[in-house]
Each structure stands twice: as C-alpha cells, then as structure tokens.
Length: 307
Image (cartoon, rainbow, N blue to C red):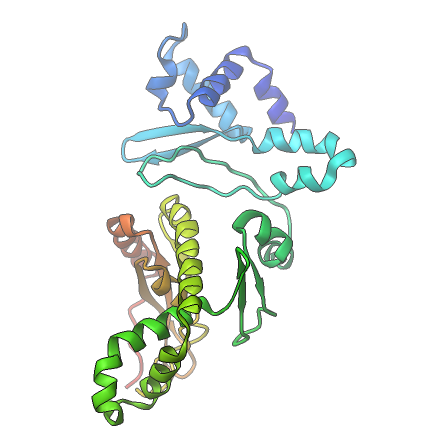
C-alpha cells in the first residue's frame, strides 16, 4: 500500500494515470506525446506505477501497451469502506479477470493478487452467489468426479447442456441411416440416437443457448492469454483400444467450438501416457500452436509408452 501512495504522490504519474483513464491501452510513444518531459522520464514513471500495480503492461510483438489497473485503488477504498458496505465492496475487490476484446489489442486489463488458499479460491469460483453475479448462471452439483451437473440460466434448467446438444444433433444427422441400418450401429451410438431423437425441441434450444453463452464468456478470456492450460484427462490413458478415457475435461471446449491441442508430458507407473491440453479462441490458432511448441520445448518429454 505504501508503494501505491508513493506512486500517486507525483503529479506527473497522476497525469499518466489520467491519460490512461481517458484512453486505456497506450504505448510509451503515445503517452509521451504532448508532454513536456523526456521519453526516459516517462519510462521511469511507468516503472514506478507498474511496481505499485497501478499500471499493467501487455507486450504484442515490438509494441508494449500500458493499461490503468484500478485494483489497488479499489483495495484502498475497500479498506475504509468495508465496515459500512462490506459485501458490495468486496465483490469487486476479490477478483479481477484479464479480458480482451475480439481484436488482438485489449481494451482494458485488470490485475489483482489474491492471498487465499486453493480451497477458498475454488469455492469462490463455484459457489452460486459468485457465478450468478459474474456469469449470470449457477450450477447444481457436488463437483465430485463423475457427478451430474445441472445448469440454471435465464429461467431454464438444464442437465449437461453440451451432452443434450451432442445427442440431439447426432441423432438428427444419423436419423435417415438409423431408419435403414439401425442394427449396424455400435452399442454407444445405438443408445444415443434414440435418446437424442426423443429430446423435445425446447430442450435442445435451451441447451444450445447455454452452450453459446459459455462460448461467448470464454472467448474473450482465452483471447486475453496465450492459452488455457489444464490436464487433458483425469488420469493416464486407459489400457487397450476399447475406450479412450473420460472426456470430461475436453468436452467443454469441443462443445464451445474452440481449438485445443494436447501434448504428452509423462508416463504413469504402468507406462501409459499423461498429457496436458492447451486451449485458445478460434482467432488465436497460430498463437496456440506457438504456445504448444514452447511448452514442448520446456517439458522436453521424449519417452515412449511401453509396448
């Protein structure tokens, strides 16, 4: 907090913050324009503001854009206002999400550091009170592996909207062939097609609306980062060719229609592969491939599964 007060004490630094407040996302050259000071002095002021977390910079190629970060000022206000209006003040100070618009240059960047435990952070991201406010939806589930999830959004209640869309669309596509050659289908498809054909149109429409809402929420978040990193699966690949494993960690991205790529990272005790997946927005495919190539070099995994 002392760094914030020190940074704000200088009128030149306050002027830079005012300019970023008027038009967020400027390069050093743009911030220097019209100022009666040297480029080097402005650069030093920006370094102080960045050290105080009042400015966040994002590099794109040779350009470095600077953004006003209101999180520390919000934290200052929260320190003295929370006793009077704790719930509302903390809702904004608890978490800031880095966002970009649909072009490569973001319109704003917020940075906040949260001192908490992984368990408390997970609770904040999954509790209905939080998801209703920031995602306009909430989920009914115990979040245990394999547990069902019910999606509540805009008055509609959906159980696994991605699966509803998958079954309805697959059944519609296969319906003509199913009528003639049902006996030729494997057991998985033979169970799914009748289930998909039995779903009412209203259920499909609501499920697809939820799918598109998830996509619209995630794309700006993905565009704001090099990639989203997660395990590809809950564990190592299953032995044999009868099953490829639980797709629960891949299904959201397939349903949202965004690209992902998996890279091998290790072998389990049985010699079966483990992997990580990287996810990016449709507009960032080249960026995704570049990030994946960098991860491969860093991980440097070259072993092969056992024969």
